[in-house]
Length: 356
Image (cartoon, rainbow, N blue to C red):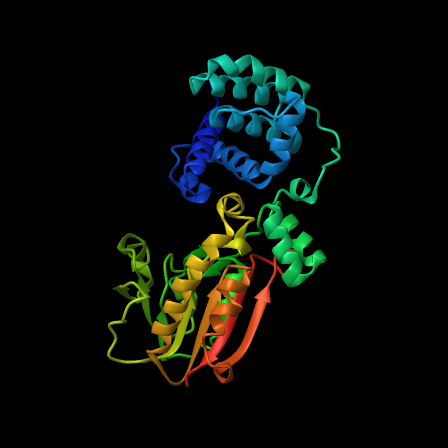
């Protein structure tokens, strides 16, 4: 009988191949806490180390060959467990991966999977390129090297191979929310004070709104998804369903505004490793168009003397500096980066703008 953890991990990895996000799928998985831990380790481990695992598959198979996604997923899972999970018995990793292939109705590949995994070793490997060693697409590595330097590029890539640290934020309602330390830094740039009117234009899931409320502001939280907004109901902010790229329905202006814009997420590869395998350079222009529109709409409702923070969890200039260049330079007070591997937590960009 297949262990629940491996069965769930396999199903989630297959859904990620179809465009799903691992963290969301794990939260929805029908599995108890004990099995959820192993399932999470396998899912995120396979996604973080995918390039290394695929190199090993080709090496132990003796040649590059086209594999069904189900077969490749089972092989990746087993190789990750053999190399990186010391407490998992090797026989269990191998036997259950063979069973996963059979369960996926790819029984003709069972003997191949078994043969490949029986050859697998756990010793050091001479990886043929940094792309495989750091398990990150070369086009991303080259960009980071160009913009931040070789050492920083390696630090970003290697940080994405580690399980992210966990930070907790205590809300005004004596509850806790998991919130990356970089995310908390973004809100601190607003200089919030009690009584200020505060707008969070892209608010869901609400962690930054909760942090702002702790400063005593009167908060309005916006999002274009009512399902995501409803999850913030307990915070006590005024919730407004609106697409922030369109005209905003506010008669009064705001003292402080946060535009934490939807982005590529390349600063969060440690917790969202699937991003590095599905993102393309062409996606950056699409994000940039929306980000510029969000910033323009937000600036239109910023009160005289007010401050606006534009932020992303992206490391890419198209989404950061190039967006800020659409604002007159004398209105930009500061702009900063946080880089994984150099600074604690996820990677972020934030710029503080004043009204003009």
